[in-house]
Length: 551
Image (tube, rainbow, N blue to C red; front, side, top):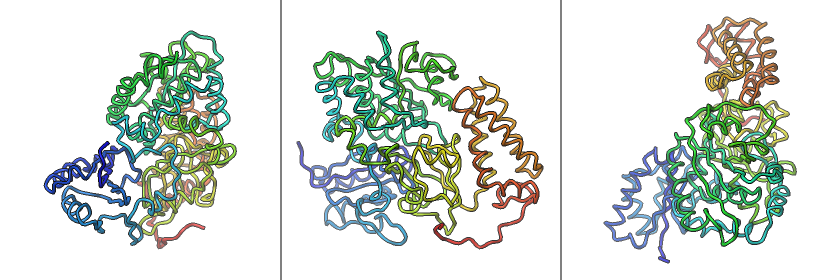
């Protein structure tokens, strides 16, 4: 193995590439050639490092120096000052609140996270299976196939308390056990990579940065339930994720880690990609199954559940990307290791896509039960430009808002429903006092109206009627009776819709009515948008905005 003096890890996640990461890398390679350093400096393209707004990012080891927003014209100075003279380029170091952080481990954004799912993202080259294996990759699959029975594997997953990270939080081990007990000559594993929430990109980043962890999780799941084949249902609009999955599957087959008689055992398992066209409803598991079968992406009635009768009528387990990426760690290190993180009923960690009105946006992985305040202020650096935290939207268009008085709520599967919202897949959008909560509810409801498949009347017609009422209110033509109609319609739609999309679509409206009813009333009675967002007859914000941390 070649020994290098310096390892320069350059983020090759989608956001850093869009920000010009390729141009910087080309310039860096050119400078290394000029200074005859190509044998001393190893350049590694990694997956997403997490802090997307500060990209392109580069981390230089062995010190762990982190550079932000690097550009092609910075390459010469980095090579001459850092690589040749050992002096990091200070102007490019991570800066926060006028303080510089020379190394990755000192940056609060990274230091306060706990990485299980994102353990390899930003660390390894996702297009090289050897780098995944060097980090212990595929050891869990070997352990499962050579030391454990399928019943053992299911027991460990059940004991770990792993819950599905796609939204509902259903116990993963229990789902596997249902499928295992079904009598059938053919079973399937499906990885749901149809991530469609606005602002959410956790699953896409895992596929781009550590695709083998998902393949390994699928193979272990296949062994546990007796499946011989798996599908990854991924959006075609994620070309980088698709490309890296194709490379990873090809490499795993070549290494004998997918295909026939894996590790010399009787277990055979292979994976195919199926690409979706971007319909939000296809994130619902039965609509996804329809799409894989070549049918229109519409939900089916349940029961039967997919574990009983799924794709092509066979028992099928559907887990999302983040759920499967947890599996190798649990099998390798044990259920109790996993339970060291999180809460008793919500063990492990959760990846959030932190976005909106917060200083540092990006991917954040923390133990379940971590207070919202820690995520927004200690990791995300608080609210920018002197503004004040107003609310956080969790769960995307299916979720609801958490107002400032609940900033210390533990973020887990038990507490969020008590507040009228859900964990969802992990989208976390922060809003300050300049956000109009009626307008926010209208934005999310319009999304679900546009994405409704139209199969059931409550979702198709009911959400459209709710949107009409919101448009009436935000244009200054609402009445107090409209608030009653919104609540009545919302609760009926939740109870009568066929699938999760319709059952959760009213959540943004109902939760903003619960916490910000005064803003609805201001639009109706005063003909005023308190945040001065809606295009109606309203007064300007007159109060001075104060940069403070909510109590």
